[in-house]
Image (cartoon, rainbow, N blue to C red; front, side):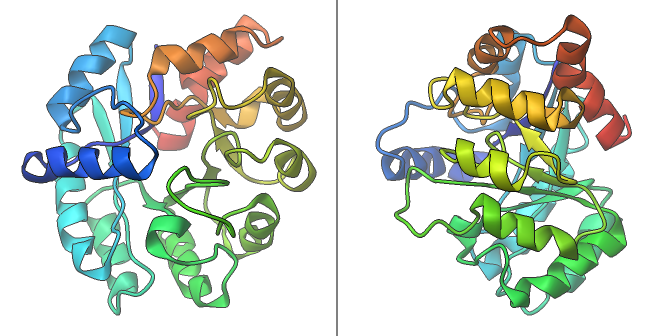
Length: 263
């Protein structure tokens, strides 16, 4: 079994524009599907993925309702577990978190670059506390981002400070922080936080990947690709080169996600 904990898809009416804009902003990354749920489903079959966690992002306050309605509709398909999102500047962010819970969604995606907040800002504390109260999972884009310049808003030291405001699971995407191997080892390995493996292939040096895996342990890793920007089979290639047991690979590929998601 293979569960991809980090994927993206968009409503059909905006998928083409969304993919085009994101590809341009990231320096021309080649998308691996057309941005739709059907496109994601087709590529899942090619790479042997059984379930994908689909992460939505509200990039402005007005998007919250539509993003979460789309997530709720996507979540009806047994092949998908969809997460919602809230925007920190939305006056009704806390109410929308209540609605996300009521819709049956298991978590939220927050992207400090796209949503213009630093992960350890005091103004985020009420949102984190509400997420924790509701028992939702939080996935953060962590580390560098191809489409933005420094200072990046979710670096490992800042996320370490923010973790004290959570009493529910937190996932730091991209091996704990894209482009942040040494900082992840210093600030996040061994902490109460999950890492996903998305966008590691070709970007995460194998030596850092091995050290992060050893110090954080396979018990706290979730397989992820970042589809449509990276393929699951690419990320598996990196993981398969690491010195970890087959039983630990099973934890990474699906068992940890089954436990975290309550599947």
